[in-house]
Length: 403
Image 1 (cartoon, helix red, strand yellow):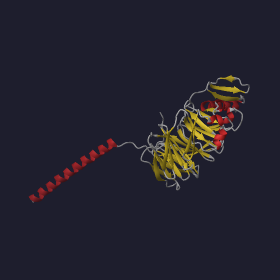
Image 2: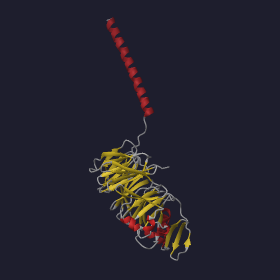
Image 3: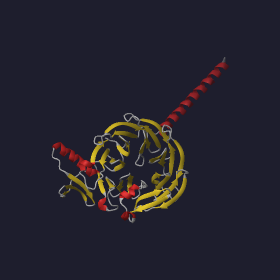
Image 4: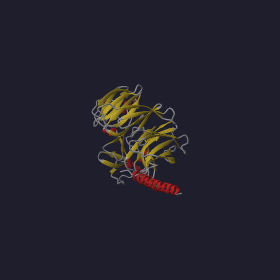
């Protein structure tokens, strides 16, 4: 009897010690998890679909949340009914077959931070810090990493890149241009370029011509002749952003970072400062609002807004100049712009998507109310990148306040 009682008491003590030890361990683990846990951000960006069937009256058709942050280097590109979107460390594929109800069909992670993407055929090229990821998107629902190409020393982080005729052209922050044959993923050459003088890069395979502001090329050719060759790359060096289409060459100047786009017109002589057109978004938007109000009051004054090195003025038909006061930084800095036919789509950081008509005309000026077709407010969203389709535009937006 005493033996049984002793054994029972011993078992009870052991069981009690085990419970106490387990409780202590549990509390320790719980305390540790509370100390090391970090909040998970479930929604960091939004993709908006804007119906642009009527360019004078665009309509926000739909939006879809994306689970990760987006920064100024990320972008969106269209291919058919699909939108390919990069966020800080992911590629997302959105099906736009029904613009009213877009659907996220795939997300692909990368080991490090990624920037912009460009599409060539069924391959998507995505910039990393010092590498380009080549992603097979022949099946958009299941994108897969095909290969990775790294820049060659001397190198810095990737600043910009373009893909043209089976060749990849990468500009690094040290202003070296790296050339790759993407068919064989073979490095071809790296060459230094001048940041201050480089206006554009013309490329035919591995043969590259650097067009510089001092080049005699500009004095001997019109923009029409330059653009007809269709081999200018969209590489930014001297300019913040560069866009090329069949009829237009547009760029943003470092001298006007808050809202000026320069247009090299097809019917103008090259590199003549008087022949470029400068679109000051802040002034155009203010004049657009003023014109709308004047139309409402039936007191419209016909005027042109002109931007020059001396400032901003309004030209009446009799060429009388007067200064106008505008509210500064209404739209905020330009974050992206794209060309579609004769229309220029511009996104501004403070939450606006604008559409401007690019005229093919010999007249140096047009009435501003004819140029600035519409502006679509996006509320508290910060548009970072836009892509333009047949009857809709896609806008990639950041949700947080940006410093």
